[in-house]
Image (cartoon, rainbow, N blue to C red; front, side, top):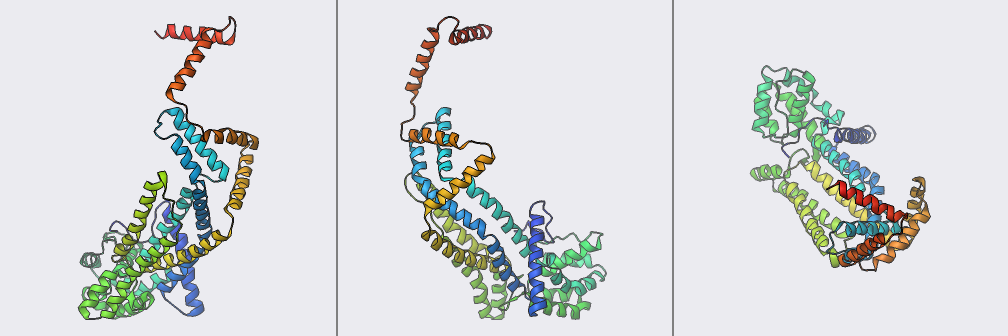
Length: 422
């Protein structure tokens, strides 16, 4: 993650999404402060994550419905694949695509349905990471907690060199170190980035670097510690660093708490995957099913390892998001057990029919094509020998064409083209 630069992300796509999500998160934080008198980012992250996944639920539902339709379509799709197995000529490939498309038309779903849901979902999730990596860039009330300390640091002679040394000493690879900028607003943002990204031990190092600011450093530390507290852990710190420092100080309870963050993240990911509908593993789908099983084993392990080295706040997000998805999945599984898939197919067909009517495609054209092509699914594909016989018969008919007929005229044009191409 060393290539992630803090401060509000200004990417063309994720930047605006992150700002919107940051605005929502800030609204939740301010509501808790003004209504409940609670200033806590970890609780804000929990509530925020639940709200986001509730908003994404319609997309999740459509994705699950698409998955159910896919399972229903598999026997027919496999029959088409078996029919054209080993045939690489253009005619066969085109025929296979047409017959496959007709199956999708029959069930009223789009072949790209799953991709569309993912394309909507993924930018939101990536933008969330940007927000959680640097909360002060999106929560103005949290950033304000650093104001007095930042002003004191920037009023200290040679603070740019001191802050550069501090960033390198604390190994803050995700923070800009260019403190030579002339814009004071940019410089103050860099200082806030460094202060928020540092581990708990960074406060003592900061006191050594800026000895004249000991009092304001201590007061800022108390305010940020309270805001960032999660069962005694600083959510801007990493579980690995918390475990290391806690072992040195003999705080073994904190070691256990920090270890639980990646462990619970792993377990909740496993639980969520187990509840999700799995692809059927028969026939030509074995390879795909095995790939999905491998991914389902790797992703939770990735979460376990990765969670040791990212801020606790991100770990909280992963845990809560997995728990919310698990609850949603349980509800979806019960829902799809009660409903008739054939009813969903009819509903999808009606929707597809209306879309086609808007596009000006007559329904009888689709039905006629479907009847013609679905008959062919059970028929063997035309072999090369049969194609040669058909072409030979066509050539014979052309050679025996009557004078002045369209076929005779076509022969004359063909002969003319052949002479000119020599």
